[in-house]
Length: 128
Length: 158
Image (tube, rainbow over all chains, first blue to last red; front, side):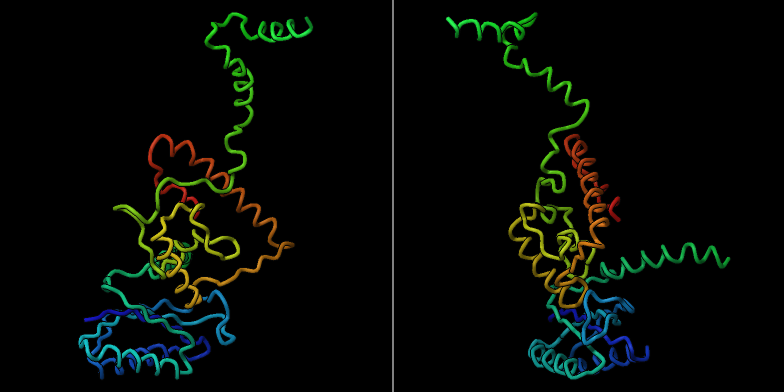
């Protein structure tokens, strides 16, 4: 019974289907170790604070992981991180151990939604 | 003989029409004149004013989260460095948590490690920001005395 948060950045010059492909790949790896992806958040294409591998932007994804078998947590995460490290599409990732995964959207998604609403307001009025 | 008239001469204008106990506050006339024009209290601490209490302690406190960039940004200087506790009022334990959160956010490129400030182009903008901040702090000062300050300043900043 262990919870983790995995955030990773996918390089921007890749077809958008790659975002889903990487997500399913992660879920497949976890399944081997009795883990589950409890929560997925797409933060979309964000401008990064500094360049990573010469990219200035990236697709951010946050995942809540639930490792159900205590004896497989170590091996599962090690394998997952190894695969992410090898992946050319994923340019940065961070796994953080957490006590619980909240069902509410994270602060980042809330901020994004707020920004989208602010941007949508005038445009929707314009189109109507 | 030369010493005696001096103290007497000094005392005379002060004691004019005032009871003896108030002699000490004879300078009050100066203070009254000054407060109308400017408040000397704010001089020297225009940019940062110490808040009472840790912003992360207590029942309604904000949670420290590496994903909350907007919150973390309040504890960074213009150069992207972590502000010291004596400016932000964060308690020691929470400052350690905050440092970890900022480190994580930096790893994910949500926050910068360093901000290069070009003095030629950024000076005006920076001064504007500092002035705005000083004004906000000055606004908050009287309110903080009357009642616990609401989230007004952050709303203004957004």
